[in-house]
Image 1: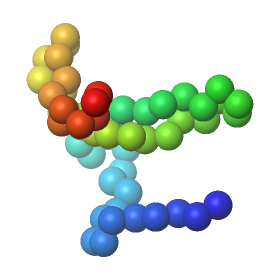
Image 2: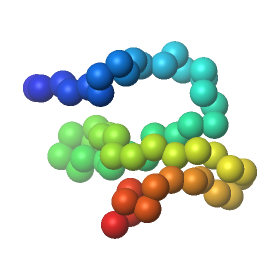
Image 3: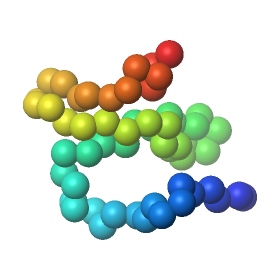
Image 4: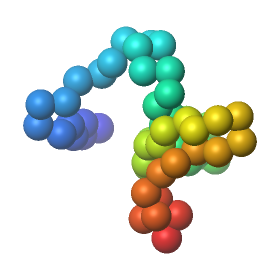
Length: 55
């Protein structure tokens, strides 16, 4: 398939940014996940993300 990237972006090594999360949708057909938004861990109960992630 086609892969798109933002200009100047890169894949960060695991555990480099432990406060960042990737919000993902699970595809029922093949059980793979696709990234749709990111967020920042504030504490054990809350993640901060943009409003458009859940519009």
